Length: 596
Image (cartoon, rainbow, N blue to C red; front, side):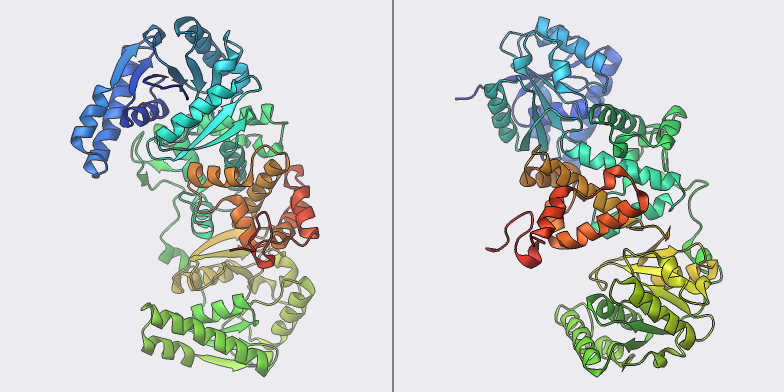
């Protein structure tokens, strides 16, 4: 029989602490909420009141329940008020010396059997615990922000935490309606260790002017289905908090360069650009604390004005290829009103592609997303060919053939001879250098990357890749075409992985390394990222869907180009691919899919 927690203390009533108070009080547990001074206490009270009032306004909490919740909370200045609680959770800023002082004082004030917990997201729970005479009763209970909403709690045990304490805290999490993952004391635990490497990488991408803040954020939201882009998320977390977490993980976690804070981050913190709370971070906000972004000097000019910047008129489009990607791209252009010439290697391939396009359009009709007349009109705009010569009068060519550089270079050399001057030649490569393809032609200024995401008719994102030789007119034309297709075009340089894959796959690789080190299970890591960070899929679910062989190939490309030790493919990923465990397509990857 586990212990009954009837009264819980919370130390520190910032956003996180006030949220934790609300979680306990919502679940019928009395809370002693403690701060260092009366003004800080009042700010904490106001945060709690604001949160519960919003919940009532949204119909998620009854007014009577809100009033009962507030009655369960006793506010006090000073730690002495915690002398009789069953559990204390500390939620003060991420400074080890501050937390150690508080735990030493809690050890003196609290009853011998009271469990002492820290909500730290990056510091060593072990180092905090040794400030007390009861390290066996010290544990990490890491809630995620906003605590009343987020389902995940990381329960962090040290090498001396008592198994009974762990079991009691796990039972408490269940009582609170939370999903807990229990892990050992390691820098960043699960979620932050995976999340902050990715966020730091995104800041580096912005610092190097590889892409705009808007395009980086749009790429990850639209390309990966994430709830927020990385730079907007950094502003929400607070750049000072992010810097502290990264710096701690870098020093504690084996000095992995992935966690070494990008210099720009330190500069912004020093300049007081802390994100939403200061009203200015990567974006500018209406006022400090406001979530509303307002235009500033870095805000892009209106899309229409940018697109008028030398964009060429496009009426007729050639699509070369016969795979899934080519089929989807043909459908997207045909539905948007473009005249299409589909070129494949012969009549048989053309018939297959034609049938696939018809099937997809028919599904749209059945689902009520496309009128029969629009389907017929789209099909009427497509002509089918087995020879590149029929591309002599098109305005844009989109290549979607196999991902082999020699094949693409030969194709572009042929297009260079056949196509009229001024035609934009686009490759849909997701991993090869676009400049290598462009230099197979005599017109590299007209060559761009147009990286559609699969399935092309559904996914709203296109990465527009400009090489060192691409003209502004060709880039503007590609952006205008994306807009006409109803897609969001994000512009980036010609670097391995572009935006999405360059940010996504190192994160997936980090997750494999975490599993490889036996730090946690695939299930718990997936839970942590879905419930703690709002990701639509956990890393191992996603790897099995993408294909482990595809993932390994992309990771190798990134490593070869950037030569960053942290990007070296995880040996476990290489071993699984060698063993033929490629994910869902072979019914076995990180999980067994044979019964699904």
